[in-house]
Length: 165
Image 1 (spheres, rainbow, N blue to C red):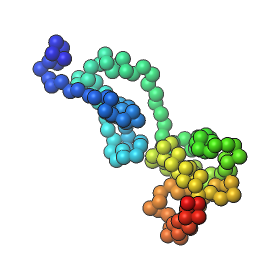
Image 2: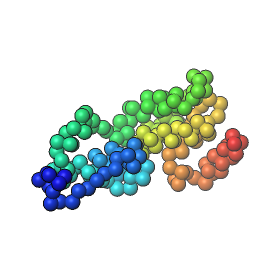
Image 3: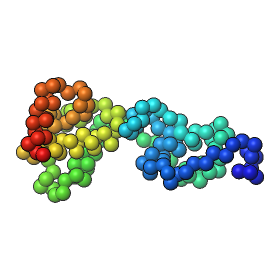
């Protein structure tokens, strides 16, 4: 820094080891509101600073090995069920434990906006694995937004959880 053309500017150290691995990319490259739990606002990230001359362009290109443009889950409704299947398989020890998604569950999953993307979907499916009965996940097992559920469904779910626990 002292020998660079920016030596008159402050040196800003980033301790990447102190940043949780799952947050490093969001902090460096930026993120959209709702991209992950706790992302209440959009953030341009440190590397948008290349254009402003605040981040070394050569370092940006060293780190930018393979850029990926992704589409949010709400824009890929056809992918929701295949992704759900993989996530359910991940959380079931055997194929025999893998529950069936009935039509009401499929509709609930594909109609939802998924502001938390795949991480939110995984959390919803983990809850459904706890709540489902008889090897079938139904709409009543899909809790996408606990605050929007009716009081009756909360009572039903609490009863089912107490029976499981």
